[in-house]
Length: 438
Image 1 (cartoon, rainbow, N blue to C red):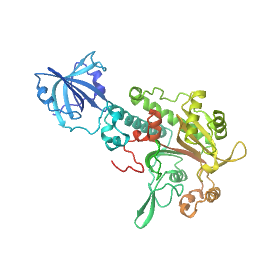
Image 2 (image 1 turned 60 degrees about the horizontal axis):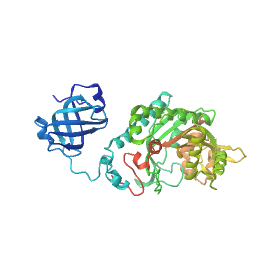
Image 3 (image 1 turned 90 degrees about the vertical axis):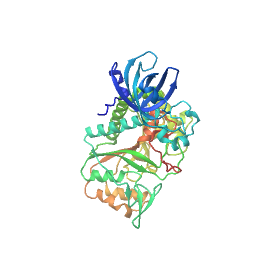
Image 4 (image 1 turned 135 degrees about the vertical axis):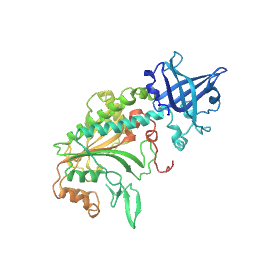
């Protein structure tokens, strides 16, 4: 019978016991009478001690760095390791022998590895405790999102990613041949989410891929990403949408802290994870006033990347918050399906908001227009053709409740949380204009 495997995270409860561990040999250090192996797996690292004269001594001489091994031994308390314990090994098995790696796996020496080379060898760069923490944080965020929205009565849906017509506009879309027709990869599940509201599901959410044919070489753009979406019906105001989103984010951050808060502090130096204060709301008009006072305002009706950063610094200083909702966006800057409203000075606005996190936009949320006639009018106003979207517009002819929702990219959220230099590090496998492999 095979031995039952113990994970490294369980070791503190196994002092004095004989256990079997499995993982990668991160480092191997030889001395005359002893060999030390630092074993690494998804839950942590531990030092293993192999003494001369034991059965394991002959095997350990064959092991190379990053080989996958099985180690059986006794858990012993010690002051010589950071964890306070080590494994005195009685048996070692080589499960998979590793060749010399093309890039260093641990953080030591990784400064010499370019971002491109790190992506080329992504399966190796993710082996480090730092890389594993990023993926665990993403997983905890996803689990928290599912759990919170399910508790609030949201139904999970799966929308098509191949569409006959552009999902929101005629720009930044991937075209493909589809049995003699032209199809598009969905840049958002937005129109399908609203169809679900028209179907009577009332509250829906989705976590799924989205595609943007955007030739952007920035630290926060990708051509394929995981989109976290939600839509809710029977709202009385847009404030309800922001409140529900805020609660979901609070729940997600708590889930991340519970899963890997200690590792995030250790590897990224980030201690403030949970959302403890209400997220402030600032109108676009007020945001521009603040930016002018700071000498950081642009002439753009939208908010530029530099302005986002400046607003993030302002909100942190004056509100003690990493988050801020920027509301009442100019109508010309938003999609046709947003509800049209009137701003503080009588100007047309979109009843929507962007959520900034540490000075970067991570979420767009809005109330939708539920009138068929107004939607058709707004479609024409934006220069779009009604015939290609008639399948969507039909949803509004037979009764649809007032509704609104949001969408955000999970990788951008994690990038900001962990203060990563680029979104590439927050994704399992990055896709951009020049990267299709691995």
